[in-house]
Structures are given as C-alpha cells and as structure tokens.
Image (cartoon, rainbow, N blue to C red; front, side, top):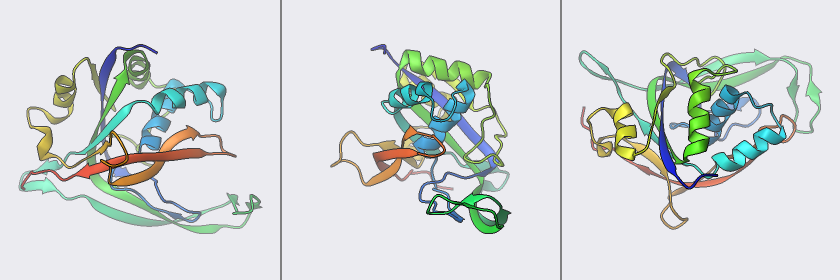
Length: 226
C-alpha cells in the first residue's frame, strides 16, 4: 500500500435511500447517515468482487483503513430546503432465512424504512492506489451500484472526483460553502473522542457469514440556518 494520501469524493443522491445499521430479520431500518459497510459494498460491486472471495477480504481489509466522513447536504427548492423524511414500506418476501439458519418457504411480511429526498456527500481519505482503483471502478462499474438497497437507484453519478488535497475534494461536494455549515459524521481518532460505536466496518460480505467490527464515530451538527 502506498504512503501517499488522496481524497475521494462521492455524491449520493436519489429519491430513496436506505442505510441498514440495526436491522433484524423482518424489520429493516435505516440510519440517518450512510454507513461505511454500505459504501464498501458499493465499491465492491463497482469493482466486481464476488461475495466471500479472497479478493473481497483483501479489499475490505484495506478499505477499513480509509477514513470516512459523511455529510448531509440539503436539497434546495424555490422556497427553501427540501425536508428529508423517513418512509416505512411493507413488503412480502419468500425463502427467508430463520434464526436457526433454515429457509422459510412461506411469505413473510417485512417492514422496510427509507429516507426520501436525501442527499449526502462522502469523503474517503487514505491510500492513493486504493482510492484510484475505487474511482476508476465507480466511473464504469462492473455491477450495479445503489444507495443501500437495489430499489434505491442513484439519480446522479456517484463519483464526484479524486483530489490530492481535502479542500478541493470538499469543494466538489459543497461548492464554496464551508464544511461547518453541514451536519456530518466522521471517524474519531480514538475511543475517547468518539460518541458512538457503529457495527458497520465490514470484514466479509459472504452470504453465509457476514462479519462486521465496530467503528468509533462522532456526529457534528451543522450551523446552517434555513
């Protein structure tokens, strides 16, 4: 891995988004910010890494070392900012897996949450070789990318750009507005400086053995006024 550091800017815009964090069985909730596991999964799909493969394991180990900042970017209307709401939908699915591991052939009612009219900026900071690989893949993804779930299709290109300094990378997402205006979630440098531990640092996406480790973060409220 190279010692040189770059900054990759990603744009997440779409009518529906869903960032699973504490979902259990037939209740599929969404976090209010994109999770690192979802961004890693998006990158794996763009590169074309099979679930549970050795290539995926190596990529996720390197991806875990990247520092991620997620920013909520209000969408503007003529009369102000478009409010973000949480929508709950009901769907029936078949062939679900029980807690015992057995397959349930009956139809099951599931509760699924989505964010509507949201927009986020993602800043990934770290190894230039890894970020260049991700940027190249997102410019021409091998498999489909979506905003948390397959039903959540991006309405704008996910790749905003790769820069060698943080200021230019942020400008791709925020324009000339300062970062302090935007509510954001960033990785804490150590446990003491963090406020929450999120189980969203992926180690494996293998269907039969998905593994995640905790990530220490802090959420900072923006100073923007509508």
